[in-house]
Length: 248
Image (cartoon, rainbow, N blue to C red; front, side, top):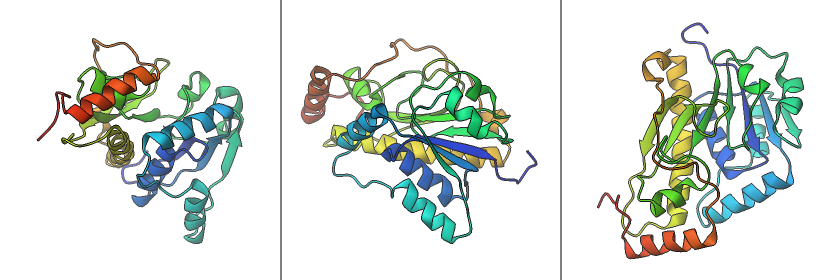
């Protein structure tokens, strides 16, 4: 990519997931407009969207993708928006196979492996609502409070593992006394979008070489969704202010 040119990228998300909607807003606010969007419309996607909306209950959600696309269309951008029933190579590659993509950006998807990861010339990026490698997997804000891990977000390259690819950016959220679990989920959502935007800005400025680094190891496992008994402990720790990483 010549210095100063915008990356050609595809943007993938679960249909109208608040995580992807926020990231898309962040990207286009800095002029990073994808060549194509691929949404997954599935029962799993619906479940994940509804689950995440509960995690950020009462917090603002970015406009729906179709609303944002309408605004871009009025500005002269025509962005194809495809829908598949599952994000996997079998369904994605027929859409992007003929496109010369620099990047693919995941805006909140299920785990995707295989041919898709090898297609773009400069990699596939994901933003994770947890600090890596300390907190991999699902429900990172919950597990971070439960295990007294600092809370934040990370932008990393995707490989065939779960949140194990090389890091570009990671940043902590300033957790203050009185913040709720919903607050933490919302702040990591917004920060994930900010970090992806900053990652593409760094790509535009050809700074990835100085930023890209291995994650290293974690003493914690790759977490699965936090069950109710874990969330009960998390909410109690926040209510009692016994979490170990407050900034005030």
